[in-house]
Image (tube, rainbow, N blue to C red; front, top):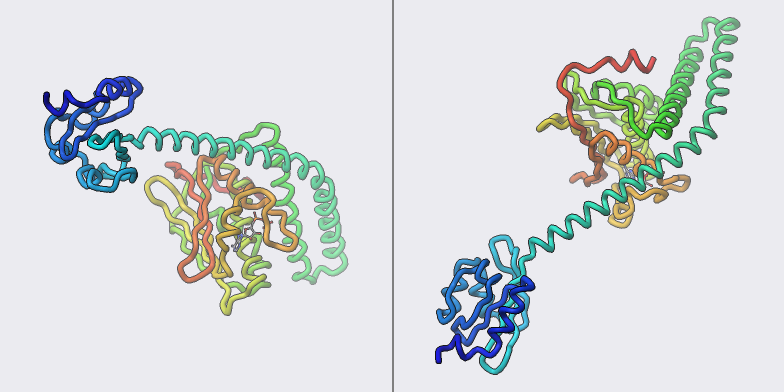
Length: 357
Ligand code: ADP
């Protein structure tokens, strides 16, 4: 009788092979039986030296020398898990699990979860949008009218008050922007689709900074711009994308105000790489703790005394609606950086000025 024939569990081994289990039985240094799933992973003949048989699978030979019961990763990128248990005083059962299928399954679960989160973020935007659009439209319209009336009266009575007239112009501009956002939110909640027009991200940065110039001056923040010389065209909704950028800039300003460094700085960088335009907004403020990071993009999570905690979750939804991605990293020198990347469109962008003035 050879070593393979005296194995008591060979039939069981083959039966388990029907279930996809890759199993082999070892007797000391010898391989005494292997079933077909194991043979598919590691071709070999019963009766040979276990070490020789195990050689083709990276790390398996040393896994055979590990204490019984220890789960050992093997394969070039650890894609298999080897486990051995004693069958009796002489025989050891070896099981090899292919982790790739499990990892694929896990990845599918994560993708489904991300899909669900995306849907729930879209719902948050949509529901909040309807309520806000309804509640804010009326007071914003009234404010715009009051400001325009005030400007007319001032221009008539004190035509030389140029500073005051310019300030009123800016106020009307801000209110107009707010009503544009509301208009877009209304349109979106009805259609659930962002508008798609070809626009220039460089111009979008300048326009957004135009809306925040007072805040930047008041906070005495140094602005560092690294923008390409030419236009960077993306397909999207100018008001929504401007909203994202303004939110990120306002968050940076808030952070610098709440915990002011010696030389407050906001940097905006736009890079185009591999068909994607990536915009980075960074600041040298206090940065974000791991606890805040864990909840950063969840709605209603804020560390600010009066924060609603909706800005980042809405920004991420808006960018995802544009087939883009929004994420966060830490700056090496302290502070944080928010990035969003969008697919670049080939061809010249339409001027945004035509649309927003
Ligand atoms: P809110 O501004 O209402 O708090 P957000 O969703 O925009 O809501 O931001 C969530 C939280 O993320 C903020 O409360 C803050 O703790 C943190 N955060 C966002 N941007 C920055 C930043 N640039 N620096 C430090 N913390 C930030």
